[in-house]
Image 1 (tube, helix red, strand yellow):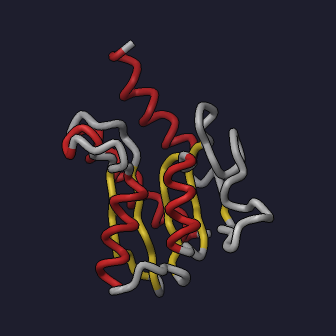
Image 2: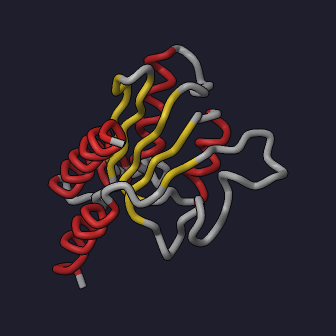
Length: 149
């Protein structure tokens, strides 16, 4: 469990960097053989790209780094439960495992709104663990959105 917390702390640092850039504070890291091989922070505004979620940014970097679009032996750590788009990308990439922080009541696709990662009809399911440093993720999001409301 210590490794999960350590890697989630790294994802939280990416989320803080996103907030500093005035992006929604969600961060991700991808781990392979115990080492972070990719990092991502939301950059939809910066890139003017609706697909530039933290998970997608990290998936693209990991695939380039490994020279393979299949990431079966990796674990993706992300501060918020992935949306349906990111969950679909994880299935396509054959992510080995997902660890996320907070549930997303408005669009989570692991367990909250959808069960896109473990649907029996899929050719690949992504096992996951949720709630790792979830309170920190929630506080970061609430702190970001509070002055905007």
